[in-house]
Image 1: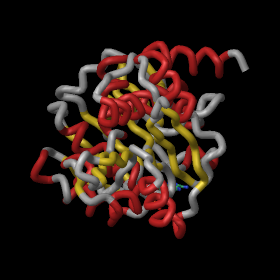
Image 2: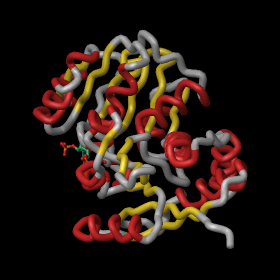
Image 3: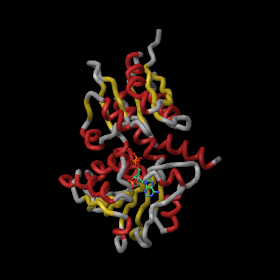
Length: 278
Ligand code: ATR
């Protein structure tokens, strides 16, 4: 009998998740025998659903919106980057039976920017829009790249200031509101708000993007997101969406579970070509 290890992504909603496809391609590419499913799990059912999954022999889970904070609370142990981000997107069964929580989103973004797009973040002035869970997970991995500074701008200003203060000891991070961005310029603007999903944009002043600056939307869709279009209109050298980050965070989770690093570029190219042909 062949034993197949089981993995899954939990989220709500989950129907359009690309994770099962991405992990199946990784498994084929690396010769790993595994199955990866998707399960719709409302927040109130999360602890029971996770316990049932691992008792049933599951080896690892990805958790997505709106379950990342619950996954953080569920994990028996957490990596430092998960601890800092207060959100977990990867749960991994450990040999002694405990559940390790990690957050691979931030490293997924950094890898996509630096390796796939050849961006050198050292010395860059970075603006992050939004101060929710998505933004929180990025701050430490970006600061590790010796950036000049990170400004966190948010509609609710207190949240930006509080989030920034948690990272003061790690680098130059400040929080502010959108009005405070006037007359400032940034080399990289990251949209970590949930606005792209509803087709809105935060109120961004003119001339926010430095010459040859970049825009990156954590959201992705088959059409360019409203923030990707804002970047193009504002002469970004590149205006990217989060498809590359999605594949990179998945590869990091795959590595945690299987100890093997899949090749990500062919998967990003495949998913990109599929959406371009729609
Ligand atoms: P996530 O975990 O995806 O970050 P979240 O914690 O709900 O989700 O955070 C959503 C972020 O998008 C917040 O920064 C939110 O701003 P507030 O903190 O002021 O609520 C931001 N956001 C959502 N809708 C917005 C809008 N219409 N304009 C500006 N910011 C918005």
